[in-house]
Each structure stands twice: as structure tokens, then as C-alpha cells.
Image (cartoon, rainbow, N blue to C red):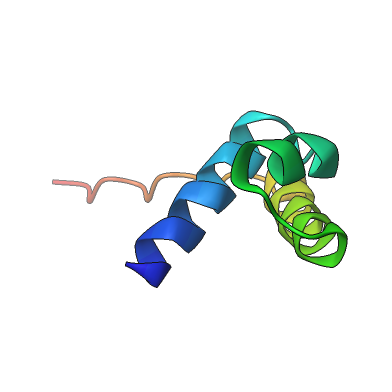
Length: 58
């Protein structure tokens, strides 16, 4: 259950653009925890999406 909660918090952090105040209010997180999730979300959002592999030529 804890892993599911962590996934849900990270999903919400990604959806709200990494706003720690939003996370703290929605999930009742402490300041440091909300900031940690927000930092992780912003880092993930800053990474470029991997490109799809090229299909093999026939």
C-alpha cells in the first residue's frame, strides 16, 4: 500500500508541475517530504522524452 501511495503522490506531483504546497495540502505531507517529491517531479519533467527505436529495415 505504501508503494501505491508513493506512486500516486509522484503522479500528482508530475501533474501539478512539482508544486510542493499543492502536494502538502492534498496529501498532508510535511514540508521536507513535499519538497522532495516536487524536486523529483521537476527533474523528471526536465528530462527529454526518449525517442522510439527505429523499426528494422526489411
